[in-house]
Image (cartoon, rainbow, N blue to C red; front, top):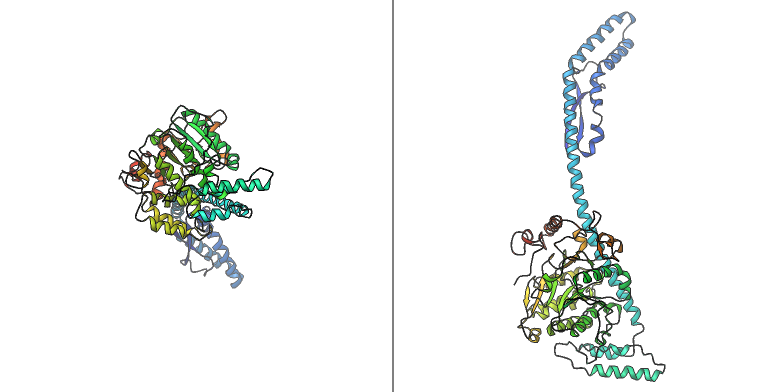
Length: 545
């Protein structure tokens, strides 16, 4: 913004004081366009000054002088004309002002262009922030819905509630007692409940609190079998299957294209997992079900475990880069947040992996009274305890002391940030831990750096995909977004058109780098092994170790 001072003679002063002039300020900038848009007003005071002054002199002299002095008045007017023309209105001055105003208009146009560019950048950042806010709102709505459903179900608590409370401290899954019997005879129904409870309560409880029930589970079968020794697994109840049916179909397309088994589970197929019957427990039930599913597979069978709101982006790339990694259990950091993600991970059929998943699921009985983000908050404590970090006790205390509800997330983020100081992105070797003693060979738990896993939150990458970067996008909740990814979902035909999600590797890499440079508190800047400028644009950041 700049100011231009233009000195214009004012006719409000004495008719004789022609040398007196008054300043007028013109503001040059976006807000002054209306003033500078009419520069002829400034020049008119020069071109018409002679006529105006002559009229004023004539009127004044006519009122004050007798008629016989008319010749004197006319002479005065002529003198004034000559003076005005000589002082203010020569052609060179008018041309000078016109050139100056043209120059100001040019500067104003350049200033406006720069301002528009800056506003466009601000708008882009605001869109990113709004997208992130909407994602958080969706998650909070889901959490509130689960809590409301649990309250409703609590009013109809089953016969075995007291048994469940007594056994909770030991981590025993006694909730099978609450299964609804179908026999018409009430006494027979109660006897069946009691028999089931007694059998579960007699189950052996390991010292670490995890439970393995001696109940034979029916063998699960994949919805579709592939050619690999690997699979994709989604745990979704009826509500999620309806809400995310298009997203799930995109994953069917991916499994078919790459030869993976495709598993679509309810979670309640396995007796061990039936205690997780309430809506609020669903995400804990998911990890119990995955442990049971792995147990039915061949040794080292690998599963990519997915949320139902995940969409396949690139049907032509496999998960070999991650499935072939040394990690038996693999997680990744949230793209724009201080969290390890809980919804999507890779798990191999190893005893210690199954035990970890069961331990994680058992946090159903350790949940604090306040907001803890269900299984996502619990994951941070489970990881710290599995790695046997000395700080695990402190982190567990922060978790257990969460009393604030969803309206105040400050305590939750404080707890998570405390854990994330120690949960660095690396390959963690588990051989010297209690879980590691279940390994017959080296066992590794991996945490991948941001923007380096096979799946990531698509909204922060503008829902763009390419031949590099994440193979899948998480958090695609709106079914109207699916046409960006697929031109024909039923035929599994991807949308590679101008209106689709597909962009060049260079464009996607630059979008990722700009995001990393905008979150400097989460992405280390520079050219170190995991630094943004070294590996983000190529999506090649890898765990240390």
